[in-house]
Image 1 (cartoon, rainbow, N blue to C red):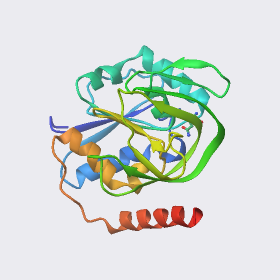
Image 2 (image 1 turned 30 degrees about the vertical axis):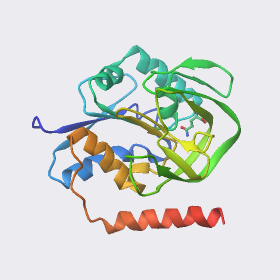
Image 3 (image 1 turned 135 degrees about the vertical axis):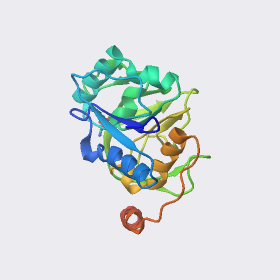
Length: 239
Ligand code: GLN
């Protein structure tokens, strides 16, 4: 491993990672390797310490119980919070989004403190949001629509310290017409997929933050085919 190796932390894949969110780590590592940038993925299990020295941290989805466990574990082992304070990139999906906020309330009505890396709170909604979702990213966060799959009960309200990732074109997202949240280099979304396999431009946005400059484009027709198929599926459902 050289000094230029990008270190990706896959956080609590043993309890967070519904719908193959762990695939986001594989996508990032491979997109770095295709550009001849060495990269490693460190899986940080529930019983392991959370190092503060990594370049990028990934959190996936999970049901309320797993999310609550993860939040208390990560509050007690603040490696991600320390890394984020020195500019490391954090990317989170669904339960990961909710636990990065200041607080979340579970279906059972219990209030839990989050890590406070995003200015948002989450409470249970009236209906579970399930299905395809398409999002137009906000300024500076990418020009192409983002496609994903969502399955959550939580409704998220963003405060002034964060901005949404984008506007929902179809689906639910945060519940107010927006999806996700961004503060500095901490970015979260409700999109599963794994979302970075469906949206390589989002993977490259994160890698650009890690590397300090946008990485050179890669011609990847097989990824484009997946995107096209999923965007088409979302349109068909909402016609
Ligand atoms: N427990 C959360 C909810 O239902 C997150 C679900 C998920 O990560 N898919 O709102």
